[in-house]
Amino acid sequence: MKFCRFLPLSAGEGHTPAPAYGLLEDRGIREISGLPWGECTETSTNWALNEVRLLAPCEPGKILCIGRNYAAHAAELGNPMPKEPMLFMKPSSSMIGPEEAIILPEYSQRVEHEAELGVVIGRKCAHLSDEEDALAYVLGYTCMNDVTARDLQRADGQFTRAKGFDTFCPVGPCIATQLDPRDILVECRVNGQLRQSGSTALMAYPVAFLVRWISRMMTLLPGDLIATGTPAGVGPLSADDTVEVSVAGVGVLRNAVQARKAGFAAA
Image 1 (cartoon, rainbow, N blue to C red):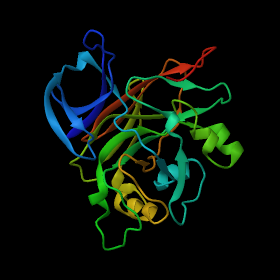
Image 2: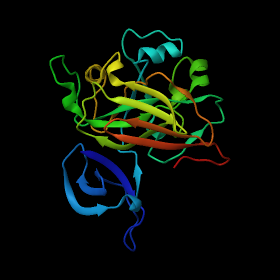
Image 3: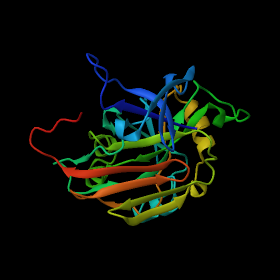
């Protein structure tokens, strides 16, 4: 199944459209009641794709990110591989959905794309043992772009400012539930040109390990999001670019890139 979150473009007279969850199908969306990671049932309401706007498919309390999880990416930036997963966080305010614009901040001269497999938690978990099936706590997988102000990352020596700007965490278009995360192709194209292409089989720390490892430091809650690292090939984004992150079995996450305008405020 592919769960999505969407906003109808119109509602009945006297009603304001509200975000809803549904099942993304070939011909449109079948709305569900409840949450994908909780009690949910299909309804009789169907939507054509041109009747809705797709939103980021989850509303995480935490966005947890893993740095340098692909050796070739660490090498391209001149960094050693970490001896254990490098964990950092992005604020939930940085998240946007498909077709929303990435806004280049005035404080950075080098903003780069980072295509990643995103992991959406489906069940509360903490202190998982080596014997437990960590993937049983995962709802599914999505596309992510860990947009990074590379010059600020290098200047600060830590990642909060460089990765935390509004619009720096595109996510979508859906959550695919029936994937094996051990060998999934992750790619990035900018203006149609392939920039990144790598399998999750190249991860130093696979998904099951990461879920188990993170759970021993903090409780993971339904809807939380884990970004699992990016393959080699990261590069700059410029105003008027279109960046596409694709994850096999999930789909394509597409976002335009815009320069910051006076008076800009993220939606």
